[in-house]
Length: 233
Image (cartoon, rainbow, N blue to C red):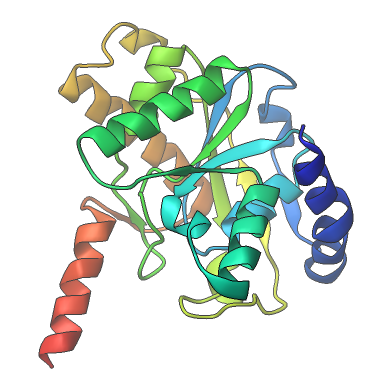
């Protein structure tokens, strides 16, 4: 565990957050004490990425968009420092080579025996519902031979609605479920049908933990439709 991560979690950020928000957690026994594993979570707010590591003993590594690390001025410095402090690795978003690079980075984290935090929806939910997962989570788990631990963030969207910088005080929780094992899909990391089936099983497990309504469509695409609709009015 890096000194920077330890400083943020145990000195600068962790204690004040725990003291003020008092987050609760269920199911920590499902997180392995060692070895690579994927924590696949719903995504309701930016603060998901620091409340989840806060309730676990092990370090959680996230893959974050590279824009978090390239900002200018004081705001850019603060954002970059924070993302580095909570264990975020910068990756370029998009398809093709960018997606493949993110996948390879995630595999390196897993093969190094670490916990990798992933939001299979790919972006924050625009309305609190759970959207279809992207298949990269299943591909990484199959290729690395690691379990996927489903996670449900509870209340972070109430504490930090989209556009609000600092979460307000409300009940925030983390619910962790039993591992989803993809042993039956071994060797099929390039089979699109298998990846979709495996990913859907993960999203079903997350939905059961979170109680969210499931929407079988791409969240990012839906967001773009909402933005076009708002501009047209």
